[in-house]
Length: 500
Image 1 (tube, rainbow, N blue to C red):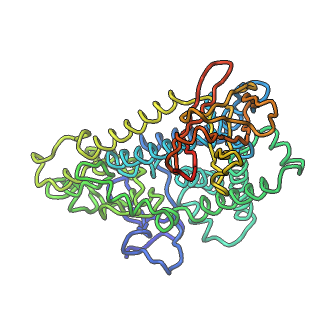
Image 2 (cartoon, helix red, strand yellow):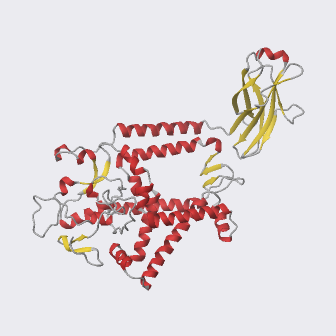
Image 3 (tube, rainbow, N blue to C red):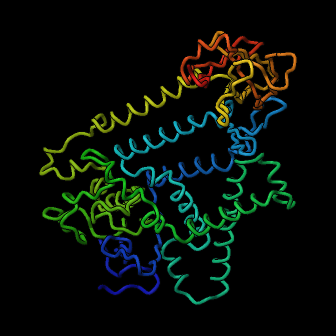
């Protein structure tokens, strides 16, 4: 191995005129991976370029949404919370701006999760693990923690020198500043998450004064600890060992998926390039290892497709910079398809195919789920009812020969005003409905705004009408009518009897 400078992390030799050859190893490569060895620290070098700029923008947008969303207000009226995005588990409702979802409508959340999953499958089929490299929370917060580390301790070489140096005042205050900032970010992250479950300004004040519920402090502490540990220390270990997606992604790729790839057909044979040396008969890769130095996962992209690669494309920026400096075309490392990587010649390379069976299938499934959700939302009723039949006993035979069944009706009023409803039983002409507690035989009830009311009802078929219930189970319908709008909600059930 070439001699290495004690503190700079580079060898005395150059990979090309003006281009240093970095002394860095791919500590997370498949060959170096071990489930039992201690973690090798990774000191990613700062990258500059198109993809690094894109990652800064994505980080700013995603973190801005995460931290600020609980503080946005949305006026829903005097009786409802005004937080725009609120997961109000205490009152069993979810608020997303003008959208209000009740527990009976959680199929909308299921639909959103299905669309999100299919969207991830589609993105992976098109552009590989771009989710992992740009928008995954682990990547975003790790990027943020590395930026903080770089602010306090310097870039790659400075951080390596600091870790190897003895504990001096300079090292103590730099490390203290780093960890204090990490903790502040972690507390803000945990606090922002708990704000999604209760009114943010109110809960923030309670957290400061000590009046918040115990569960708020527990989850604040839990989310603070996980952010601090996973973003500050575990980092790439989460992606390699804890996350299942790297192992699932292989099923999402096909020959036309775009992946960050080293174009070996252009880069090999690699090696240092001396001033005045012709480029003919050799590859464009000068083996500077800049791509390895900027990789937050600690891999060498030149080793081919690897489960450790999160497709962040920082190696593209690093390599493009080197190509500019040595006067060679950019794109030695680039987004490339498996098909073109395996093409025997330049003439056999094919243009990118976005429309192919896999992507069309994912797109069609997304469209179908969105259409079903849209239809369900349009058909959504402001009133929901559920019917629970008495099970013990199933029916009662009265002294006059009639048959009586008991039911519990739960009427949900989703509107923000109290409503009156009438209840009728339909399907058995001779049946009579009575609401328990209504001595005058009334069939009208009031339900408060944003509330559920349960009522006990009896349906009786007199002896003279038993001819209509010849079987042990006869279809019966409950019709609940909104007296203000005339809207009717019908629920099917059955009337039990001994039969004939």
